[in-house]
Structures are given as structure tokens and as C-alpha cells.
Length: 386
Image 1 (cartoon, rainbow, N blue to C red):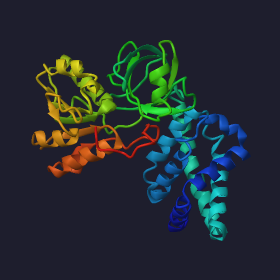
Image 2: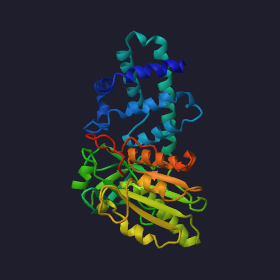
Image 3: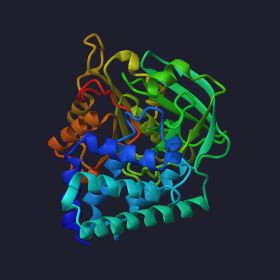
Image 4: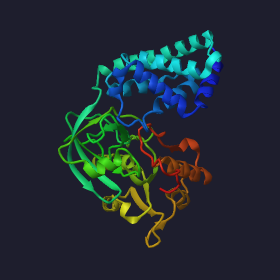
């Protein structure tokens, strides 16, 4: 397999831009109309995800055999779309048709054979991972909305009770499908440690122009049923029994996974009497969006926990003001600490840069890569604000 040729041909097709993406999905839906029902009505944010995932795979194809974890994740995750093995051949055929259309004579028989072999290798890994996951877990969990707390114009808290225990670790995320937007999945993070009553809390921040968050804020009601995909991610999870001291930096509803971790540490402290030192900085643009301020302030009575709210755009706020990453980086000397960072992509990038600037090593800074179901405001450039 000529890996260099694969990567070069992929760069050429990606360089075409949206036209290539449109061609792929048009070919897929015309040749296999039965797969259209797997996708949301609006394809505005969905249509580039196949290309984004494939681009990641092609870029790292040399390490696929030794580290198939990303492709295995895709296989397990795609179970919530009602099928992996049945639909992979259709996607593969449309991919080859797209490559042939845009590469023309450069799509030689040798290159076609390499692409066919590469795609089949990826499909085999996905199918095997999906089949293995099928032995131990459902493709999704059903949840019932128990209560809704619209904390502010921007922030909504949703209490969900699952129909069976949901086996996540504090700090993990899951894809969620709301009835207001069927087949449109978005990634959220439980904001609490697992509970015996099978309830979990989801924090949703309204994104201007977002397809899901606005509809949920306006229309979600107690009694509505939602679907939850399998839990994913491990960069923000910790073991309270073995972790060292922690610096947590959250922007907006990026607080959710860190709040779940703090709750699990509090439970551990209550039973064992031990806990790491934890500093949590929560950043928001306005005071009203410090939506868990009372709970975190109360938790500040614990000897191991320090909560520092930070507001960037309200000059009347009496506490820390500025970008949360800058405030946290410059507050103390963090030698020996592990940093957990969560928020918008721009906020995470800024916070990581600030921590690195003051001497924290990259190995000590943990954050999740943005999952392909988060919403961003399509009308605005990414900003640094928390």
C-alpha cells in the first residue's frame, strides 16, 4: 500500500472543499436511499463529519495497525445509528466515486486498489469493535427527563433518569439525542458522579445558531424521552485513590465533567478521610452564568477544595476578572499539579497556552479533543472568552 499516495490524493480532494462533501452525500443518498433515514433532516453540521473522521484516519494510517483505538471508538459509537456492517459498503462505494470524480486520471487502478484496501481495513476494525461492544452494552440507553432548571437565558440544567444503570466514570461524555431534533446527536457530559437512583444531570449552554441547544432550551419538557450513547473519553477522569493534586479550569458548561470529578472526590473523602488538593477555577462572561456558584461555594468548606469564580465581561463583579486561563495560570505556582481543562475549543487552547507559558509541562495538562457533536456558533469566529 502506497501510504504517501493515499495521503496526497486525500489532500487533493479535501482541497476542493464543500463540493467534494456535497458530492459524497449526494452519491450516497441517490445510490442507497435507505441510509438517508440515519441522518438528521438538516445536514448543515453533519455533512463534514465523515470527511473529518476519514481525514484523521488517513493522516494517521501508518499507526493504524499498532493503535486502532480511534477507529474502534468509531465502530462502537456508530452502533447508535442502527448499523455498522450493513452500511459501510455503501459509504465505501460513495467514497471511491468521490475520489474518482475529483481526481480524474490521477485516480489510477493502483490508487483505487490502495483506497479499497485501506477502507476495508478500517471497516473491518469498526465492525469487529461494534460486534464486541454488542456483547456487553446496548447501542444506546433510554432516559426520561425528570426535571428542568432553566438557570438563565444561556444555561439549562436537565435531570435525566435512565431506564437501566448507565456505566460511566466521572469526567466522561456521551452523545445525546433529544426528541426535538431526532437523529441529531450532540455530546454532553454528566455533571455528577454516578448515583444509585440512575439519575444524571446534563448542563446545556445555548449556542446562537445551534440546531440542538436552542430547541432544548425552548421546548424540552419533563416526561420527554432521550437517548444516550455509550460513555467516551478518559482524559478528564481520575482515580481519587491515586491521583495527585489537581488544578481544574472550566469555561461555561465545561464545568460539568469537572463538577462530576469533584463530586466523586468528595464522596471518596467522606468515606476514606483522604483527598487530593483541588483548585477549581470556573470562568464565565457574566456573573449570572456562574450557575453552580452556591454549590461550589458550599463545597469550599472542605479542607481539600478551593473554588475561584472568574468573570471576564462584567466590571462590577467583585471577584477575579479576566480570562479564566490567565487568572488560573498566574494565581499560584502549580508544580506537582495535574491540570484538567474543559470548555470551548478556543478557551481550552488559551488556557493550555497560559499554563505552558508559566512553566507547566504539556504532560501535566489534560483535556479532551473536541468531539464531533459539540455545537459552535456558525455565525461567529471562535473567541478566547471562557
